[in-house]
Image (cartoon, rainbow, N blue to C red; front, side):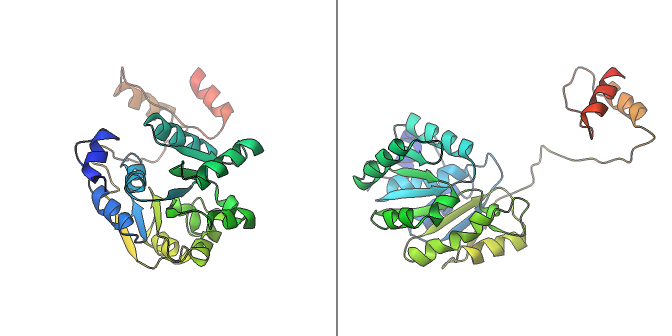
Length: 247
């Protein structure tokens, strides 16, 4: 069996794991269900990509956005790893070719939207494959308590119905305790592994002050204290941005 540290270095170019990554990799490799909450840029993708390379079979990755899927596929193929996406962006012929490659065991990662997993034909097709595990990206979309709830994500509990012995790894950058519990419940985890990384970042802070009048004088004072710096000013409408810009 390949060594995880060797793959980490040779394939991904890292000399060591970031906090929590190795714990999650080991749990996925041991076929446990796991939910990882880690901020954007914390290295969530590696947590399913690396064990996918350690394990036999294909990794089925569920993602809500086509652009996210494309980025992941491009990143993996650039590393010499066989990955495809099956979506409305692909032609019927391309999706058929992907199915052939999956049946032959030539593809390691397949990215799909949650809607495809409600298709009886596709579920039947998956049942013919050797699946290592399912990875659910942007898992907060599962929860009705989350800010980006998607009804199709809510149906992903059917994965355990159709594939009860296959592990599910879920990933998100944001989840309250209520959302965490809802994700684990809806995905029907057998193992209640919830791993939460450090959400707050020491280099970021937020400061709120009441607006005085139309805020223009306050804004001028603020800009005076941040000369030769860059930033963004948000307003409520395009008209307001033009008025403020003219000021």
